Length: 111
Image (cartoon, rainbow, N blue to C red; front, side, top):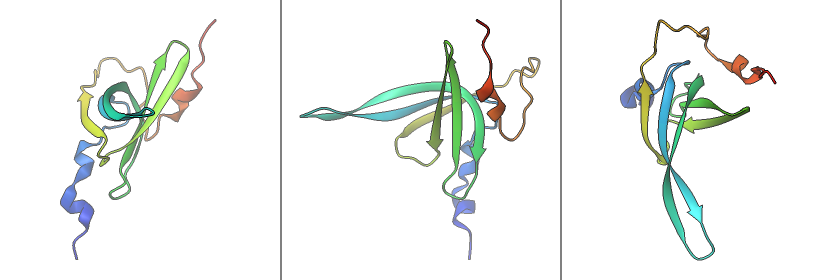
């Protein structure tokens, strides 16, 4: 019996840890008498990737001012419109590329 994850091969669309990724996704806006979808764009650095069969997910982090914002996306979600991975700049090695970049959460800002 074949494994279903090998047939779908979703992991080729997953970003690598440390990549800068642009994700366009649908956001459901509900009003009192109406409901519609709006396309949101999120740009961030991939800090973790989880490969568990069909539930492949990745977490993106972005800094706006002094605040850190994180979003987790499931790869095969119908709400994701597109995923665009920007190429890495190898000459600028700001971060050590590990399997998870959770140490970026504790980044200190000078006052």
